[in-house]
Amino acid sequence: MPELPEVETFRRRLRPLLLRGRIERVHFHPKTRLLRASRLSANQISRQVKGARVREMRRRGKYLILELDSARELVFHLGMTGKLIEVAPGQEEPHTHARFHFKKFDLLFIDPRAFGRIVLLPQGKVEALPGLAQMGPEPLGPKFTAAYLQKRLHGRRAPIKSLLLDQRILAGLGNIYSDESLFRAKIHPRRPAGHLTPNELLRLRRAIRAVLQEAIRACGTTIRDYEWAAGREGSFQNKLRVYARAGQPCRRCGDRIARERMAGRSTFFCPSCQNQRPA
DNA sequence: AAGAAGTCCTGGGCGC
DNA sequence: TGCGCCCAGGACTTCT
Image (cartoon, rainbow, N blue to C red):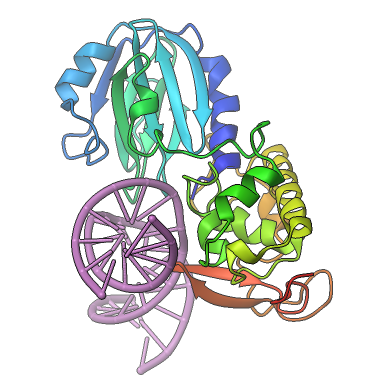
């Protein structure tokens, strides 16, 4: 489940390899569903990408964007189990949906559950893509302030956990880092978002940024599928305070970590440290 | 309008 | 040992 730290780790890994490289050709698996959000067919994309050089690789929320010198941009979303891995030319891997042939290696989009997406757009049209168009600010950027949170959460009665997962409010958080951030901010995930106090909003912003920065330093969280290069796992799973720790003792107070369903997702929290009332 | 619920997808873990 | 069942969840659609 690549969230911001995992996607950023892919970017940092791949950018030096891809920059100024030439995509000699592209091959999509005939049955891939990853192009479902694309208006272009596999053949059209292959023709338009062939021969282009990579000018830049950037990240927005959970999206990766390859800027090509042919005035086009290749947009990747990794979904739940997607990964971008470079392998020796021609090397086969299960669940490969797309293969980008570079001179010395192939870049594979591997995705067992096929929730990922690939879209090719003209330069400058990326920001109009549904999902990207309405996306909230980068949590590590300057626009993400407590005042911004206050404004966006005002009047909202949904649990804060649900709204942290909403990419229109904040870009890049998923289930793991939402739960970890709420724990560090000592906020109960079911608290109505609009009822958070100014002090809590300050703590939440601080916690989100700290958790994401730490997770990026750890190259992300490997629970099952995620690897940022062949055989290379993240290490943030060793630092998780609540996620996937139901029934285990809270590292801070020793109480048992609880698990409840919220917004259709498993939500982990410490019933003692994360109070239902403002604090 | 906001919020909840349904949908897609497949491998892994579990109970029997 | 093997089968069926449930679960994981990001983003989109549909409903109330």
